[in-house]
Image (tube, rainbow, N blue to C red; front, side, top):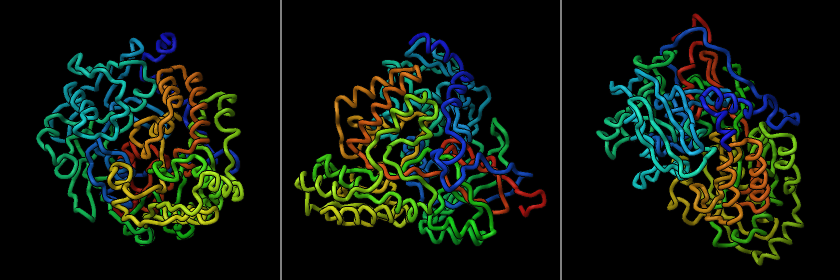
Length: 544
């Protein structure tokens, strides 16, 4: 293990390893998918005064400790920065830390950039980093990223611009998560002054290329270019995010030019947008899977046979065609194929071949329900008007249940409330399942698979298996990539057979840009990369 760690003595090496494990370029699964993935969008030809962006829901908060869903991270990634940075190509590079070294298996040392200024005018120091990371571990904050700090023994200042993190045991994942919202650095003075209002009003006291501007609750939020930014100047002077919860309204806003672009395009609008002549619809690597999240195992779903029956009865191909606009791939794998790109052929085969069938077997599903004594039992699935990917998956589950002897009721949840299902146990009361799109925050399958460890943050239903927990611990402690991925292939098979969540499809990132702007990345990197700073004028003579 020391030999493996000795190679990881700089950010440059860490970046090279991440690049080797990045997603493949091409179809979503390399099998000739009917949609093409774009590596990026054309570079801007000039600056622009402002542009407008559509998001499907208003963030409940922009506190980085709670940034665990699409709306929050899409905005926050442009305001707050982390010690490391995810690139548009889904590799790691230096962020607010110029170097990251690990002199021994349980130590990570971050040497910080000089002269970085917060939006409140203060200069970043090691004290700010220590304060920011410790907020993630404070039980009072109920941080969404707390589980990523479970192996942290101490975070301390070891120099004016140096922070040392001591781990309780080796942790192959921790340094990778420092490129996500888990590694965000904010001004200690600024956060302290905001108190309980931090993240919901005023500034965020971060270092990114934009500062938080006017926030019109229920309507829009503005970002303003930060002229004191340490990195390349943002090409736009202002970004306006419009909260458009209705999919039809978002599509119409894109078609009319009311908004200039957006991620998470409603799948039912792919055809209209492609043929509109108003701009370009891009697809990029999403590292994302669409799943049926199980939230209650105290009832019928506590019997693995009922979960397996629902999986067998689901019409995945039909859902991909109708719910994802054909831009997706049916799967029975909980992890994406791209997440295994860095594995050896042998390990990749072990992880992805021989999984439970993704095709339907209604007769076998009926037998399983009957054997479990669940025939006629009622289950509740949450649905929402966010988009047809959510609503049609909910109805597909209802249809599958009716065919195999289960009664499935649908509970409609408002888009803003739907995001609370991920973070608030009370919001999940009375719900057995809900459509759930999961995106990997790092290019390691363990990012997804650790969710089913006992008491994990997203382990909604309390799934617990001692053998599984032991494998998670073993994989986490293994720095050698090939050995770690071998362990993770065992986790993959376990989870795909026992189904703490039910996998449905892989889903690429969708991005629409009108003819006025360009430069946004096509990949899921926009969740943690300051993508809005790259957006500028598509033409030299474009209207500002």
